[in-house]
Amino acid sequence: MGNTEKLAEAFRLFDEANSQDPNTEIAGGETYPKEVLYALRMTETLTTFAPDASEALQLTARCQHICRWEIPRDQYEMNRAGYLRWRQELKKFHAAKAKEILEEVGYDKETIGQVEFLLLKKQLKRNEETQTLEDVVCLVFLKHYFEPFAEKHEEAKLVDILQKTWRKMSEKGQQAALQLPFSKTAHALVTKAVSG
Image: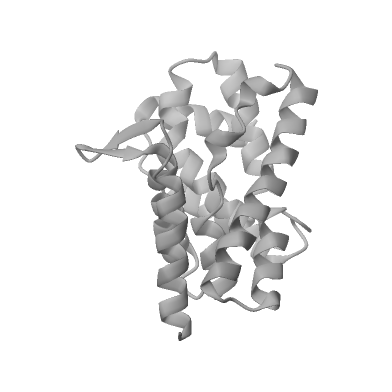
């Protein structure tokens, strides 16, 4: 199996696993399992933002949230410590799931190791691929999830989240974020956050 076929097969198996998500979301008039839609958005954003991304990075973007619903947030304390513990457990869980699928497809240890490294978000700000992945995660959040989220929260919290998101991004990621088609309200919040 050549690299292109392997990549297509891995994507198919990632999407198949994510299609079990009981949570759904509507986009463009179609209903998707939530994590399938997220994975498609990650791939689409990576392709635009980093068209020369390595195969390992393409794989990682597609399985960034693989089977996320299996570890619900409410299994952990509803405070910052609980949130951070949940996030750490998720990273390990996603890495293990991805490894299982990539081994099934026949990927070599080096590629699998790189996908695990990226899913665990190692060396953020120091490793170029980890940073690119983080930029893509932030861009997907800002483009597709920020506005619905903003409707449910107070301005102070939103500005704080936007500032934290901004700090995680590279300059290239920030520039791409400023080109997103925000609504007037969201644009005002982003402007306030990044100039604050």
